[in-house]
Amino acid sequence: MSQKKINIAIVGLGFGAEFIPIYQKHPHANMYAICQRNPEKLQEIGDAFGIEKRYVSYEELLKDPDVDAVHINTPIQNHAEQSIAALRAGKHVACTVPMATTVEECRQIVEAVKETGLTYMMMETVIYSREFLFVKELYEKGELGKIQFLRASHQQEMAGWPGYWEGLPPMHYATHCVGPVLALPKAQAAYVSCFGSGKIDDNLIEKYGSPFAIETCHIKYRDSDLSAEVTRSLFNTARQYRESFDVYGSKKSFEWTLIEHEDSVIHTGESPEKVKIPDYAHLLPKEIQHFTTAGVYDSEDNQHLSFIQGSGHGGSHPHLVNEFLNALTQNRAPYPDAQESANITCVGILAHESAMKGGEIIPLPDFTFKS
Image 1 (tube, rainbow, N blue to C red):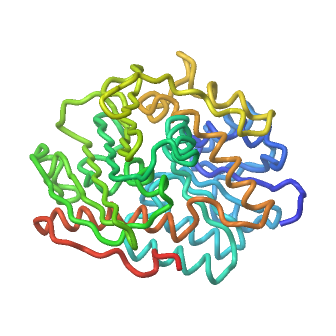
Image 2: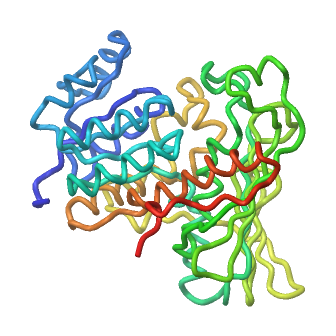
């Protein structure tokens, strides 16, 4: 694209409202339009942020020729359909996680990107969090040495969330733990094997037919000697909220803190050392640097469950916006692009399938592989 400002439309204004002021301040963006099914909330948000273009209908928004890109923040069951519709309407797409809920939907998005030549990015927060950026810096400087193994977990109690979450298979929302173990070595998953453990309440099982309290998956990397393990829970498991990843290298290893707000640990041989994770705002345009530590949902009187439980998502939101906009203005693929997003998402979808089949090994589909 040219260097003109990119007209952004945000779809879904719960968690999505967090991104409005970031786009408003970013030098490459024009925060052009918002879309929300609830007209009262639409007007409230539009008035609060001074946004003129407002749509109740997603279909009408996609007909607007001035919209260059949509940032989708709707319920997970809508992600694939809305992403495909936007691509077919000639819009670039940034979409919150997961990419889709089925392997077939992931395939359709990858095909739509190839056919249209447009950009798709899954907005995975963990791989732009300050913790991930810290470990990525260590790795790129050679301080970790050779990566030997990666582990990640995402444990969360979803009681009180909207009804569509009730009984969701844990691995169907696994991108927060799958993302970092694939993103650090810029690798792809070749196949998975997953076991389910425990049992959730009977009334939660009914919606999706998934009985497991916890699902734990092993991932074998493609064209690599590496493997990783990821663990996911959503209901009936006593654990403080935790999005975490551990990386074991030949020179140094990084382990995420066990308790929120405590320090993570760097291991060098037999010498563990607690480490304060720095912020990485300096990687961003100065206009949006302050959004790594402050946003719409960080005050006591204005909070959102995903922001509270995710501890502000590690300051990732402005990094996500910056990556998406830079990809568009520089005419390059973002990370993760459509194929990489499909690989990350399909790990979780196929992991649950494996768990339901007693741990059967299931390969990732070819369309998720990059040559």
